Image 1 (spheres, rainbow, N blue to C red):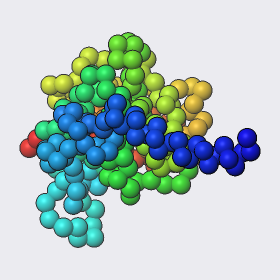
Image 2: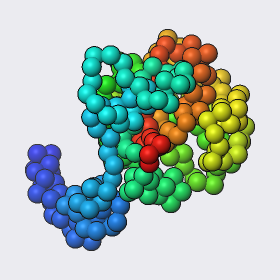
Image 3: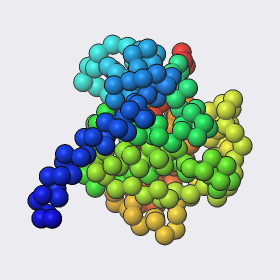
Length: 254
């Protein structure tokens, strides 16, 4: 069979294969499992219950703020009180409602497929952050937690953000040799103390960030202590400017 005939035959067969797959595995909502029109989508009710961030936002963490931009840098109260070691940051969602359920499913519910659509939301939210030759790096997990979960959700998000933007990703640029206790319920100061010297640059990857902008990727930003620890390590290792991009931001009114 000539190659042209083979290709034309495949073009005729492929739509039938897709139709058969959709009959067996119809697209379902990422949130509730209801039928949807396309893969990796949310149904109407879940979409309306997912708090996407838009409008005026804090330029350091991406949390929504009232009012309109006035040409000056805008920051939330938390980011004005604490000196962030990164330049700019954005978040796609507020950590509440359907967003919280989706993130917990990605993080603890063995739902790695959620990282792909989540990364698309993050790319949209972080469109002002991306720079030429920027290096993407996820917030690292200690090996014991990685063994328990089987994957680092932040690394999955970074991988898909990299695919969407064409930027390089270094999944082990940073490592976490010291296991820290769960940070839930701790104050910002307690989180910062707990994270002192527990995140380091991978000795064989450190050279990749020297002189380059680095985008740190994580699932949720609460106080920013973990991202601050990561950013400080990157700056000490010779990185240029640090930016942060998270799937969700915990807000005080959340």
